[in-house]
Amino acid sequence: MNICVIKPGMFGERAKDALPPLLFAILKPLTPPGVTLTFFDENIESLPGDVSCDAAAISIDTFTARRGYILAGRFRERGVPVVLGGIHATLCPGEAGEYADAVVAGEAEDTWGAVIDDLRAGTLKPLYISANSADLSRVQYDYSVFRGKRYHPMWVVQFSRGCKFACDFCSVHALYGGAPRTRPASAVAAAVARLPRKPVFFADDNLFSDPARVEELLTALAPLRRRWVCQISMDAARDFDLLCRLRRSGCAAVVMGFESLNAGSLRQMNKRANLAADYEAVIADIHRAGLMIYGTFVVGYDADTPETALDLAAFAQKHGFAVANFNPLIPTPGTALYTRLEREGRLLRGRWWNTPEYRYGDTVFQPGGMAPEQLAESCRRARYAFYSFRGVMARLRGVNIRGRFNLWIYLLANIISRVSIRQKQGRRLGE
Image (cartoon, helix red, strand yellow):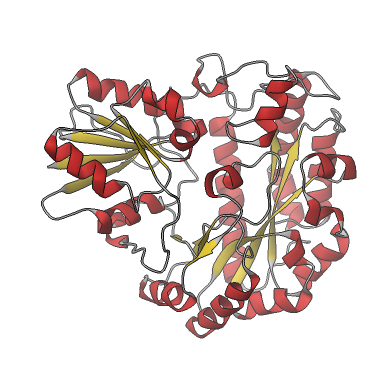
């Protein structure tokens, strides 16, 4: 049996910011002998129109759902059974079931084997629900699946699943619950040591969801002398000694959700750790520890105005952020934000992700402090200003560039971000 495993792109074409999808590396060790998996990632390669397989497994998130449904329809027209999984299928199994023969809700560790058994027997069920409780000490990752695929020179590694916070706009809590699970630090370090010497990105939504386990991880990584990047929360960033240990263990940059400069917005999005932080002191400590900052911001909460996005871009520029995102608030299914806006009657489109009218960057709800068009345009302008050639070169003086590696990371990340933003802006999903 041959199963095609597909990661759709937003637009069915190659993306400029693609990283290796961990799903491929997870599924390979879970697959029994006699079953061949053929992996396709539309972010780096075209999916052949005449690809031959006995079944198709398609993993979708909210922004790739429409494209995934289009591909599912093409396979089913040829009589090929389709299994849909991923974050969006997990949070919207009923919707996904309209386009597939089977839906996997949740993790693969306790569902993938049953899916294959039922495919072989011709008894595929409409829904497979994971307990989302896999013992991560037993999860294997086979990176050989990426051999010959042209991704950016960076590995993706996972230490934990879940996050201890429950931010209003984030679906991680809905997906995993409030108790993060971790892999043994020694196993993660051993996996990193086996990978060819390229930088590593930790895919964890918050590396510091379990502080005690992180200390073990930093100790295990330090002797490897590898460069890596991770996502951290504001409470961790307020610990200068911890930031120094990050740097000594090989961390080059941290991705952080600053989200807003407005206390009212931070309260509304339930960003508790940020409310207690002095942003300028935190930024100074991160730079003093020798780390670069990738800051993320979200615009569109009730206290925000048409000037907010550009004010955030000026803040990030002034404080030497290596990279920054200025994202219009997007209510995705499964989040407290989506539920609240739906209850308040403020959603302009329900299933916006599966409508031909939606274009990347559009506003899909009624903001409290501006018109929907003003929110979309203000974020577009902030992104374009921050990644203008003048902006990139001006930030070189304030970014924490220490050595050629940091300079390479800075220039590569900014070039990719500049091109990617222009590639996506205003495009219809799925096309």
